[in-house]
Image (cartoon, rainbow, N blue to C red; front, side, top):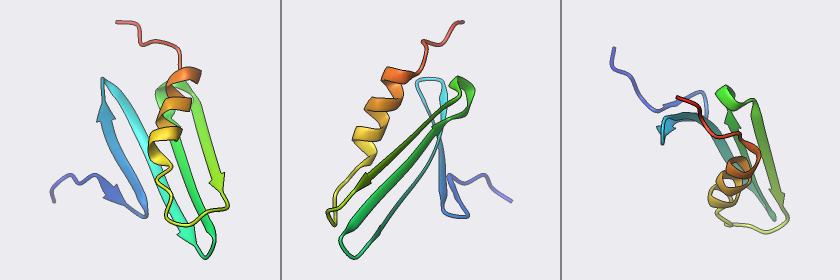
Length: 72
């Protein structure tokens, strides 16, 4: 009954007024990150052939470059 920021493997959060939907994954020798900014119509996918690499910061930087500034 309470809102949560995680469901079906996707993290949903709001930062600086933007909705961010993301999912990271890993398996042997691979790390992945999917990041969506639905309101800005931006999707970023980062694939890496290294294990245990935090790709979320890179995906967020790429999404910020691709997104148009919010108009208020």
